[in-house]
Image 1 (cartoon, protein in one colour):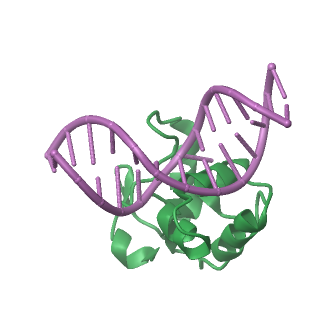
Image 2 (cartoon, helix red, strand yellow):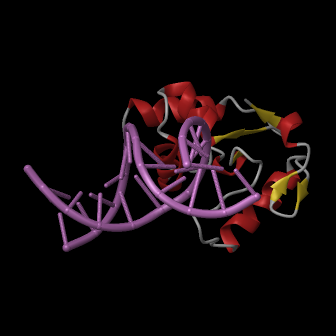
Length: 103
DNA sequence: AACCTAATCACTA
DNA sequence: TAGTGATTAGGTT
């Protein structure tokens, strides 16, 4: 862990229910262009329940999941969770992404 | 201690 | 519109 990750989590915890953010935003928010690092850190997610890593999506609004390949199951679950929070999905992307996304 | 991998984003042709 | 490069952190060997 590092300050980088801590900031990410801090920012992530600030995300209200029914709202999402992007890896890019988090990365820019803390450092500059550690986009990957954000996802990396989230994947480890030491703050399991407090850090809603499912509220983090790609800059396009797509869920993302894993790079290139889609794990599928985990992503789908996240999708469900998001939907439960009021976020509407359109396929693998967030509907009204620009409205719910914090950027 | 070093190397390899990984949830992305942005820029250029 | 498509393709490639850049950058950081974490885990493993």
